[in-house]
Amino acid sequence: MLKQYLQDVAAKLKSGKRVYLCPAAQETVLASKMLRKKYAVLPTGICDNDLRKQGRHLNSLPEIEIFSFDSALQDESAEFLVIAPFHSAEIMGNLTIERSVPPERIINYQPVEQRTTCVRFAQNWMVTDHGYYCCCMENMPVFPHDSSDVGKSVETLEQVRNGLIDGEIPIPEQCINCIHHKKSFLYVSRRLNSINFSFQGWCNYKCGYCSAHQPERKNYNANFYLEEYLTEMERRSIVNDIFSVLFATGEPTLNEKRFPLYKHCEEKSYFLDIFSNCSVFDRNLFDLAGRSPVIIRKSFDAGTPETYARIKGVNCYGKMVDNVNQYLSAPYLVLNPKYLFEPGINDNEKDILNFVHLCAGLKVDFVTPVFSFLGNEYAKSDHAKKMFKLLVDRLLENNIFTANVDTLYSGSYHKLYMESF
Ligand code: SF4
Ligand code: SF4
Image (cartoon, rainbow, N blue to C red):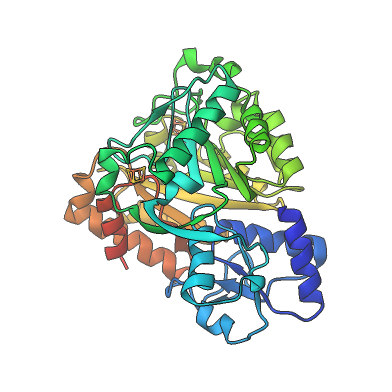
């Protein structure tokens, strides 16, 4: 459906209509790149409710400005295409229910309803070899499934998800006071916006906080045929018209099962959101990004080769940067660098400023600053707060926005994230 929507948007733009993509996110940057390459048009702009983004231009597409919805709505004939794995129902609800914008002005409109629940239940799930879950909070609820039977596994997903939203399954205790358990807009259709494949897998890096570098993990992925999950979800009509596949299994570009998944994403024009350490250059991924949208999420976590080697356990900073540069020459590829703070290792000015300089040189639009999974104590320290703010401020000076990973972290992370502005 993404291709069809972009074709419609291009036709409207060519006929003189104003069409905005929303929100300001990696997916809308990719959609803009697809419009430019395939139809030689660009959207009128990108709309976002975040005041910090309004009035700015993207680094990777400087022709595009970010507007507020208020200013875009002043043109009563302007139309919108909403592309956001985590927030699209929220944006549609905000426009049509809170602002009374006629649904016909949203090119991919679907009815939404308001409920008190965790919005993740409706929109995004992660699947591992043992269970389904929606977030990485401490004590997050996990729902077991049978990964040896894809049909049964997807049936479990559908039952759990609908049961939680409709109240047939009681809201888990740990969700009741969570910041994400609140009044939210959901799609009436209950279709999912994304699935995150997080099965166990092998990685060639040796990050101290991760267990993926284990020899016995090498052939582990032979257990899973990831695209079969997508086929089963499509058969059950639980996949939304614009859909993201997050692929975070060990180092995905070393996973021999990636090829049919790449093919499936291309055929269905799903966003492929891949977590890669970029230690190897995957020619198939690069070629895919010449035809279909790809986001590479890459943890840099350092600004110098020495710190990088210390964190990753492998000395290959230069090769990694070369690979990243090569990937970025693909027309439909967006890079999302992450900076994961490691106490005493990368929480210093030199690493942070070098990292920002590198991101600016790569024309990055969005960076994800996070804390390692060490708990919240470090994040509460004055030094952590100071370094977090330094990173966010320097990025913004370079026109780089930060993407808040709202499914991954706790209320205290969100508080810190908001305080840093
Ligand atoms: S984000 Fe919060 S409410 Fe949602 S599943 Fe996780 S713990 Fe529960
Ligand atoms: S690069 Fe990622 S998957 Fe690999 S060891 Fe480090 S954290 Fe784990």
